[in-house]
Length: 493
Image (spheres, rainbow, N blue to C red):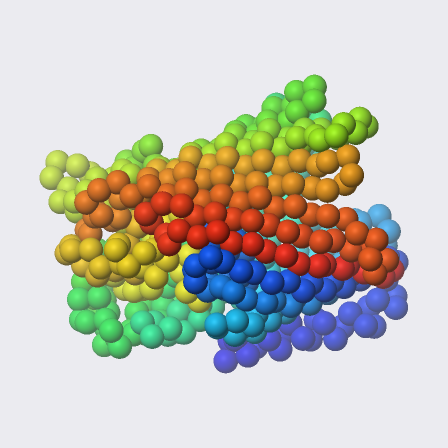
């Protein structure tokens, strides 16, 4: 019922655009179309052709694709300080060994000044991270197709004028709906984030900090016994929801499974982020750290030094046009080796260990949505890795088979004087499985890609995109793959 109401509200807002646009002071409408194809030397699509693509690239090659999109923004005035309405929709059709028809984006938004309400599916990368070249934000990377939700929050960082713009806040609160799977039905997403910035926009040094909190909660499952559920049902009441918002353990033991009695309700996944931005004469630098948590030990930093470390260097706009100009460099290091220790037995410690990132004993598919990891794609599902690592001996059979990872990642972006843009991602990882079912050895993997975007005069102006990607190592099937597509965008005012 709630999902039907969400769709109805989405279309109700869309219908209102027609009459609203006639009265609005400014409006812009954009249309886009793309047709492309992908091939690989192996049946598995290379990692950097599919990862962090919002679930739109098939895991199996070869494949052809068509993308159609439209977006619009209508305002009551031209100052950008009043009311506005907008929408965006994208349809993706993939043809190949597995045909797909996807709706990765379909949302409407309404807002006033710096605050907006969003209804539907929207492509988002959440957390303090570079969104262009990153290996993937830890908890919400844009690897999976977006979850439908209702969200209220700010549009980027909003200065607090009573601090004379010294402090700015970016915050949101959302409720979403997970898709039904074999292991769980009718479960929800609770999501919130708040980030702060210290430093006025024109200052050379600014500091950032914040937290992202995600919870999969509620639902029912035929696979859960009495130790993990109550007659197959998980806590789903409004009172349970209030516990989830503040991550509070239940005060009552009535009708609560043993699992819920000793844990907070739901599957909690998040990160505590911090960073600093420094402006130099020709480059801007952003250093950041995302610290993962799934329980109290993570919040208490017991799992240090786990997390994503990043350093981005971005060139400021220049008038010179050399043959080639490097515009952006990104270095990242990811480690998830600690997990607060290898056992649950706390002994003299205050907190338990074996955080087992992205796995959960109630939500058996782990931190995934429609068969895709929601967080960093370098934590792997069973189906993502070679068969050698899918069924390792251990105490449990779980959906996530590789969450102990060390990763070095390099991202590069530049432009030639001809206007051709180039982007590359190079990733070298060491993988160890999970504490409960370790690989028993170091499994090394290299994945890399190079993307070229060529401006064309065809069709009154369009883009040709080409890419080549390589997987070489022991975690994934070795492969070389390629991508080519033609994209056209129209703007109407």
